[in-house]
Length: 101
Image (cartoon, rainbow, N blue to C red; front, side, top):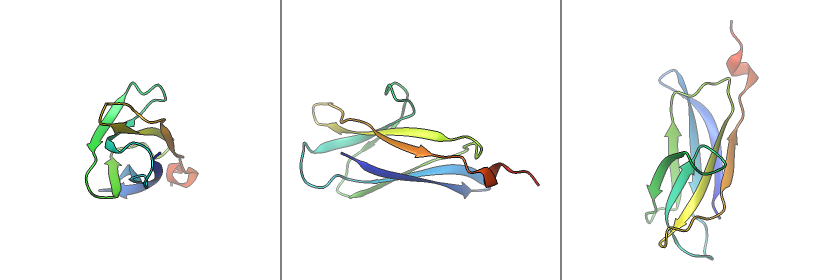
């Protein structure tokens, strides 16, 4: 099962979400890819990332509204195209990012 974290950052003065995860340690079927969905029904595929030899993965989702929370669901994909249970990654809006001067 994938273990993921996420942070909100600024890139070119725009809010973006940075999602990182590590490939699962030994055990279970070997994944060939990771899919990132935007909905809990796993219908809105945002991106599929092939698994490589590296152990650490990262994507940047740009132009996000800093006043809105975002949810992502990450699954690992087997060679037979079976998906693991999704892991929820939740990025909460921060009040200080929404305050206007």
